[in-house]
Image 1 (cartoon, rainbow, N blue to C red):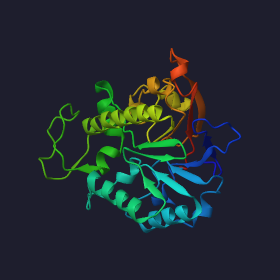
Image 2 (cartoon, rainbow, N blue to C red):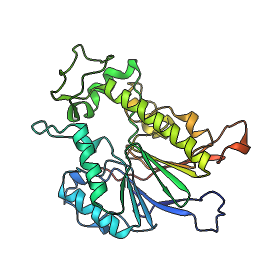
Image 3 (cartoon, helix red, strand yellow):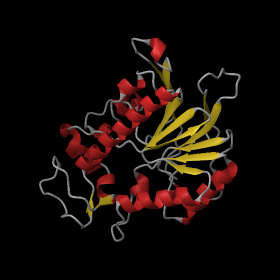
Length: 295
């Protein structure tokens, strides 16, 4: 991870010289596995922008380290935007808090720490820029379900009490209502569908309001974002990391899409393909990922 990496978004009507809104980017810090513990903000980030985006897998939301890190962030930045990654939801088998309970804890942090914005299918408008935040779980097609289910710890360490949806790669029906069970691929497929509906709606709202759209997700919005050394994988596991939302990237509605999950840095652009350039806010969509990693 580059501890200084930042990006800027020009609000509607601004020129490059009119003080674009600037954001520093970080994801996948994994505070929960730092070998020497959390040693202060300066050990992780050099402050290079007034606002900070944390694109998931930051740490255990119930831990003192996560609380201290977020408090340090809001003292150093004007606004801190946080989306949950998959690892925020990981729980120990003997204390299996559910996704609902983890989400409630993250919302509590957002309410108690002034300047922290936890965006769970929510948006925040800052100086003409609509920051659209969602975990964006992935769509796993049936041929890849077993591979993803068996290879990803998400389906062992993330819990729910909801009845298992149809289409499970497993042979049983899971836990009855009211008891804990690990999530399965149909659960995350359902979450993905809701995430995409939210993002589409917010992009249209940003366009109608004349705002620039900055999308922040944890999972990758395109298989173009998969690093070259993983791109040739034929097991189907890449479906746990990315989904095909190329039509959104090419729509002209997204100024910048920030994401995490991969531990490889990504900086690129996608050309927009709208037939009517006069009605689309952007000619390119910028892609940005600035991850840390384990340890």
